Image (cartoon, rainbow, N blue to C red; front, side, top):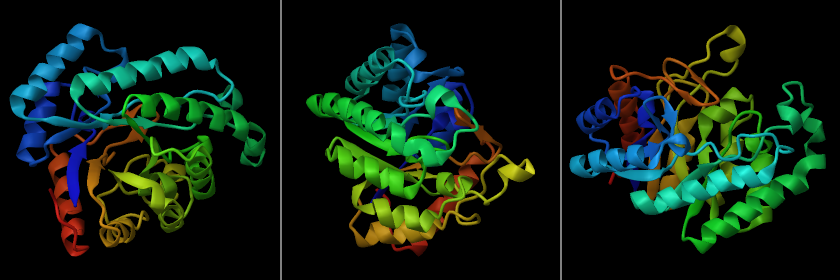
Length: 285
């Protein structure tokens, strides 16, 4: 059973517009990444309270804190970043959610020319950092959803599986993103098959392989790209999946800090994914 959620900042920066479009699209949850063009972990307590009041009044909940934790170089200082992570865990309690979206680190120095063949030299540090966060999460009843983002250690199916198997914690699970595999020229079907046993969260966007090389840095309607989204949804149905599917369409562009879809295109993205759910025999909560 799938419960729809959304990175609502894809609609726009105004939280009231976000909520209005979500309600019109019959989506009752948000993966909280930003409002007012400010990341969730950079908001002050007053801004958090104001947003919480808005969500409570409109009957909107959170599927997870859509944090950027892990989007730093693997050799960058860990302790300051860990403090930011602890803020994300704290916000879980504020908003009544158990989930935090995380990543598994950029190459040393965030080197854009890093040779991925050199990742094994940094594997132990990646696992040390991921394990430290999983331990904190477990102590607070929180689950971390690792997203297979472009250019991080866990962008390839084998390395995602390596993280999940090696950390071996129920507090660290996979957020499966088919489009990110396609964007990185990996096989989304392989990505699903190698990580499905750990997948308890979905991010829904689709992508045409090679699009970014042609200057087309935007997503496509779910089911029309190379993400083979129906394959993972059918697999999840067969496994008895019960969790969130979070809309992140990127229909007007995307990058390291987020994406843009707009209030006009967002409802179409939701409708297209609902068609996939129906065709795959999935039920929506």
